[in-house]
Length: 331
Image (cartoon, rainbow, N blue to C red; front, side):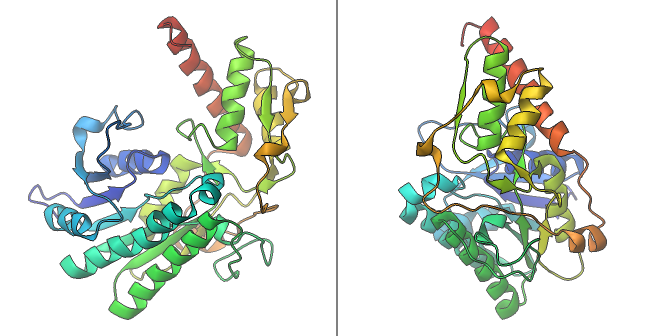
């Protein structure tokens, strides 16, 4: 607790999709929220600007141990949520060393800072369904063996196991949420669902005629990020630290995502989608489907936004954004 009597939380990656939704959720729960951001010449705060005056931003870097110790010492949080990562899978092949330093070793940096400053602080690690990769069983659950198919997936496996290691070695409350794909209007433009929703919006407004995509047959378990941050918080409120799969329990192909998004505005996706081999991955993950029975039973968590509603929400948000930009002459 801080001097205000409110619970305190540190969120790394607060300017990202999940960080922004989690920060909003924690503010609603009455937390004092401290967000970790890297110092850079071009700082991007658009996802958090509508509540930025209600949080405290702290400069640190997951590759710098001293800076993370300073953050934990100064903030004295009850909970730390590590959401920072190099999280775009295709980039992890182009920058595998950076991905390993931030997405893997960065987890150790945060855990070590907590161990040094105050081992009673609770820690959440953002694990990923990409750890399952070439899935050894379907659906994937907490006990499913990992078989990552990208440098990102490999780095996430390291982050996951080092979290387990600190939990078991030092008795720390350290948990991992193995989250399957979760999207929103705040998703980065490089991710396929957002690429589709923005493409649909541009076509609907007459600004474009096609969307170029890779493997339309790849299947993912897609949910809404706003639902999934609730699961993160619930894991941190349990008596014992355990890892949980968080998923919708449904799988949909990229083709189905196109159909849902285009039909939302009365268009036929086949008239506008072009397959471009340059967007194929070196090693494809063909099917991910999560079994979140443990989270639903023990955390009493259930997702509220359906796949079709999610795609519609994203298309509507991109249309609104483009219209707003057009009014200001920015398109």
